[in-house]
Length: 110
Image 1 (tube, rainbow, N blue to C red):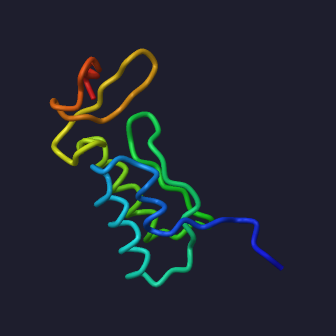
Image 2: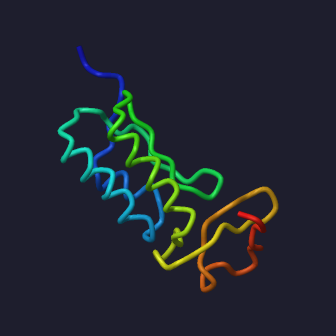
Image 3: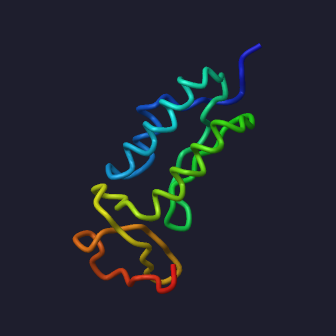
């Protein structure tokens, strides 16, 4: 029987986010390989300014890495990978450096 779930390859996952977060996505795929788990990556996206990676099953060790890169993403520019902070425009949030921030306003107390 054919699986109904489409797993993302590493390159497909990287294409889901900005160039600045490529190293974070690669870190998750490298951890997945090192652990030797068969857990599939089903979604990679930006949500509330941070990187979110979703899997088909829970693996405690892989989840630890996913949570770590999610936290790191709030300090790394989505566009270029430079040191950044959470910014907002209206109801939208992103993590951007000074160069890419443009009209986005910094989020205070984050």
